[in-house]
Length: 516
Image 1 (cartoon, rainbow, N blue to C red):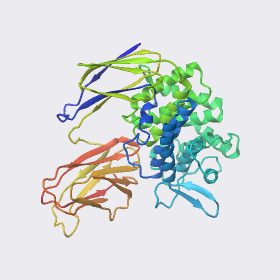
Image 2: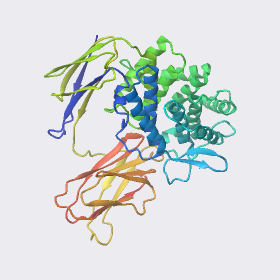
Image 3: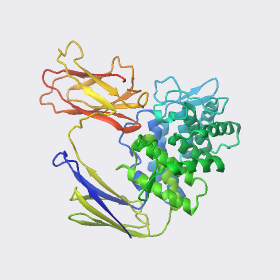
Image 4: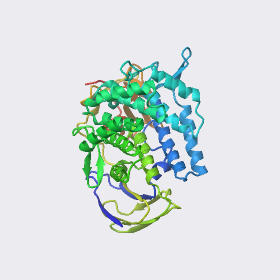
């Protein structure tokens, strides 16, 4: 048996009546993600990379269920429908003369992306056992990528990387080259083929500098797939020294200063993949269990993580771990002792994928969790509550400034967004504007805007880095305040939220973006 105590304390400024708590129990690490195949991230899915991030986890979960004989016709039908719809919405371009295929982010972009093409390639290679993938598209994508290889074996960057973490700290080429090499190795391209032999040589030459933890973890996975024991041992040895171990949990961060949860999840997942992709020993599985324990603490309510890439890589790693440690036997009993109630859950082989959830009468207080038995049990305590719009300095900020102006002549006011982080620019940024009643959006004269989506009463603006205009169409009395949220898509913790409202003298809002 195992017992753990959890103290739940809410912030002091929680809005009265908004707090609620629930506890959920599953018999499988991937059960929560399986329940939410259509939406593990409550984020927009407007471009090619984000559509792939919605598609790829389905592939890993299907593979896991198939390998452990848990795949039912109902689950397969639901998941393959998501795979098919995701594949159909991808943006791709075919060069008629060379018969080469590459993928790009938005429909109107005229430049291709070798990173996204590699992402598609590694995902399609696994998806083709569940849905039809045109073999010619796969082969032509591989050929297009090979054409971007430099003489030194590294791959040149084509197109802008919206996730600036992929640029790495060693050089722009090394991290990208490691990613493309991993994609080809996962597609079972031979490590001694000319293209991969050259790219592996490029990566080996960069091993003199292992200051970038992200790149080191990714290369450890690459050399594991390539069967290079010497390079793998060196890289994993270095990672073992810089890992953060505490109370049976193990993870990695980029630097002591940069502790982004999203980036830490991705790095730790690559280390987990490297540990488990080469006939792991019992000792390796014990080491991996520490990483898995930490990763599961980072999962959100829906089974995903903070953003797209960390969700994809983490679920790939968790699926591999779950396959290796899967047992078709055993059962467990989970007892939750809350301040004013006691709840009991049974986990067995007949209901291990069943999502069991109960609301809790108490939101705050001390909870005791006890598990007895021999089956895996994953317990998550979730609290939800509302707070007033946060204030204070953030890496990203949005300022709402209002000015009086006759509605009929021009746009009435200006709001400025600023970025004050350490990177030269942000990643792709999302501006989520809850639109006031009676207003619409106008995007004339906004060069950094890549895409705009409207979902119910929200306008989602995709910004290439770090305007958009809300224009009043008709007056509405007694308007309630709405919220503007701006955040880095790949590191959502870098965000800011501001409320905005209108009085009778205000007739519009204009937002201008400046980089600082």
